[in-house]
Image (cartoon, rainbow, N blue to C red; front, side, top):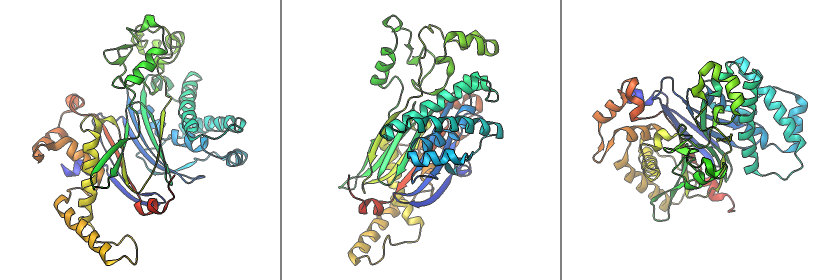
Length: 425
């Protein structure tokens, strides 16, 4: 069981300003898995990015997005001088260095990507006179990539493009630069902060918004964009046009294109069902993200970024408490290291006391993402039940999706010492 749980896990020390380390893991339900997870460092600016992509209708679009969106974001946040330099060098090179991913683009996909990326760079430079806003930059990157993929399919530049047209993907991307944390989310992936309060209890804070029918503001937005005559058909049975669960997503162009284009490009290959019923005033779907900003403080200890496969199994406050307890217990797996030289004896005593308390919470897994998956699938009111966990992992392919979805999790640890010395703001 542990071998299965740990087969995709990875742990990295980063030590880049506010970012200390991260743990990731993925457990498939679909075969092939439709989730993608990527970690990357911006090459021309100082930020790091983490992305989770939850595909539906297949894995290909989530895979494509995971290797393209971070370049679009990195480009959109470049100052005009660096943007100009990037264009003048005319290098067809990525703007991020991938730290962790499970696959890569094909050569043909890479060529198409750089054609569109360079066109985006020229457009950004032409509009560089407007004041910079991180929120606008993230909005623009998400929407531009979705528009570019749509155009690449229509112009038959993307190999097997029509397949991508009927696939979709949610996306949640975290950008960390010093004390600034930005989260851009489209769909139902989620990011949650783990905060240690003054009385040493763990608090959870959502730093993303889910776009589904549980979100009343999102439901109102969707209904407001279409005539009142469609109010009974736009959202039916908690799904967009009675079919799609997320109310925002990349791809799914059979919810975005004009009906005539769907009939021309998609119906011959996929049949008439590809055109949803009551399809009167498209687009019904957008890739526009909601962006949240958080100023990191020393109390912010970690963040959990995950696809809805985790959140369907466990509430955010339980996730945060489990990771917090794991942090305490994990200390006992390593040799004691003092966080800084010349510590006072009283501070060393406090450190040893915390470490002693952690012995009671010593975890089975050194990786916090694995620890979360183990608890999500195997926890009962009496603790982890091995039989339940083994049964959840052994479900046959034809029924597994009814019990659990793909899970992709990144646990991102912040450097409290860096944040303690950073000015408040």
